[in-house]
Amino acid sequence: MVADDKRFINIAFNVVLIAKTQFIYYLQLILVICFAYTFTATGSWVMQSKQVLLIVSGGIAAIKIPELIRRIREQGANVRCVLTKGGEQFVTPLSLAALSEDKVYGDLFSLTDEHEMGHINLSRDADVLMVAPASADLMAKMAAGLADDLASTVLLATDKPVICVPSMNVRMWEHAATQANVETLKSRGVIMVGPTEGDMACGEFGMGRMVEPSEIVDALKTFFGDTAKPLHGRHAVVTSGPTYEAIDPVRYIANRSSGKQGHAIATALAALGCRTTLVTGPTQLADPAGCTVVHIESARDMLAAVNAALPCDIAVCAAAVADWRSADAPTQKIKKQAGTPPPALEMVENPDILGILSEAGNKRPALVIGFAAETNDIQENARAKRHRKGCDWIVANDVSPATGTFAGDDNTVHLITAEGAEDWPKMTKAKVASQLAARIAQYFEAAE
Ligand code: C5P
Image 1 (cartoon, helix red, strand yellow):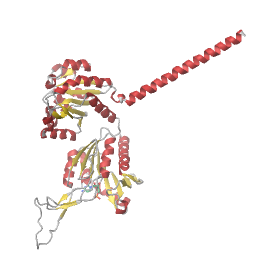
Image 2: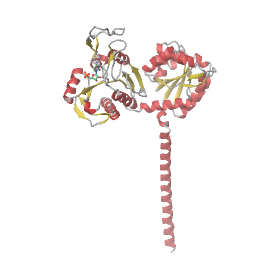
Image 3: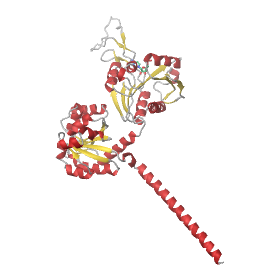
């Protein structure tokens, strides 16, 4: 009886021990899952150990920078500050140093700083350069390529991504000079965060307020989230829509392209983290989010805009470029005169943008993709076009009226590459775009 009792107590003890171990194991598992969920849901992981070089220029919004540094560091990123002379009027180097737990840099010609940490190293050590607040003056220097203090020199010498958080008086923001500078910076890939509308320190109301630190951190999270995307660091130029070729100042020759496919491709590339420049003829479509959009009318304008956007890694020529234009487009309206015959329209050939890009020597994008709108013998014609134009891939589609491809939402395409032809089933233009963008990402992954 005593022996049985002992055995019973032993078994009970072991059961309790196993249950306790299992309980602790499951509790730990639940805690890990909860932690991982919170971490992922808040996006905190994307900024872990990232290096942010924060360039603080002169503006009243600089008083919010200590709060911004605190919030960036809460996300696990490190902050190092460059403070301009103007910035120093609003926030002290000591407060930035205390919050960033790092030295604050400000002097271009400091012998000790150049020895310990040259202006090139400031940029080299960073994952991103953030200018906050970005004054009208500093953005003007950036656009002009000036380098007369440490902040502007670092910004000119960097090959890292740059985010600008503008802050200024409403009229300074709306001034044509500032707007032109902002467009120049955007076309070079600078990311703009804000400004926003609201009351200003100067007592006025309008656009020009710096966005709040929490929104700036959200923009940084989006940026670092994008760096994990497959086409991050690549630049694509996409042409879309029709071109208008002038006959005189009021008349033009156009075509029925809606731009839907080209715009969808630009959207899909941007969604994969690609810096995307969309050069588009006139369409009814809204500008796709996340792309730099250049609006043009004629084929020659489109070529100029494409050339201005180079270099790029990927070119997708989805525009329906007019093959010909009127040889002579007078600057005055051609008058209808009683008794005289209608004017004869002499046509000349337009530049072939796809062909020019394919033969662009050291400026040739790594991947050049053309479209072939065909009504018969689609694959055969598309293969011939790939050779004639010298591009890498051709996306061939049937545009015979029965398909409703022009202006419609669906497309049936064939992808022609050096390896052969793939027939894609009928799908929406958005799906064609995302599938093509995924193929482009695979191409670069395989090439790495
Ligand atoms: O020669 P075709 O117009 O059939 O070729 C179609 C392809 O060439 C499309 O990718 C179109 O965007 C491009 N193209 C061009 N410049 C032109 C004519 C066509 O980029 N002038």
